[in-house]
Image (cartoon, rainbow, N blue to C red):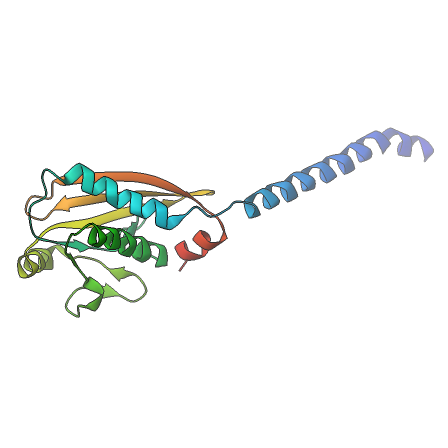
Amino acid sequence: MKSIFLKHFPTAVLAVIAGIALSGCETLIQLQDRDVKDSNILSATHEAARQLIKQSKQRLEDGQLIAASFANIDDLEKSSTFGRMIAQQIASEFSKQGYEVVELLLRGDIYISKGEGEFLLSRNLKNLFAEHDAQAVIVGTYAVGSKKVYVTSKLVHADDSIVLGSHNFDLSLGPDLRTLVNR
């Protein structure tokens, strides 16, 4: 009996040590994820708007702009609080820079899916652009990674769908941002 114990003792000790080491790594990873600080979303979205304006300045004519909720790249028919919020923040910066931005949240004749924000339907798009003399639309997508959210913002010409400007940025996925992308 003693020889069986001595024979398997080193293996048992190694198994216990490995278990402790692995559980410690898991705890360390969880602590690191909790330590991720949220990025400054306002700074990032306002910089995105400034970049869109800078890139499109020569090609942008007089007329209004429309902003649509940013969509989740994995399902372009879905957005989140984050997607709606960053569209509003970018539109706000365009407005502060002197551009006329149509507020779609106040309209009743656009497609609104509960909890997903406004999505422009192609059949209504031309009517909407004509009705407001809108020359371009602010659109974008986002992808949620394990530690970051990656955002693509674009200013697209109404008549020919040509991209007038684009800007990519990423945001650290801290506790606030994680909540926003999950709503």
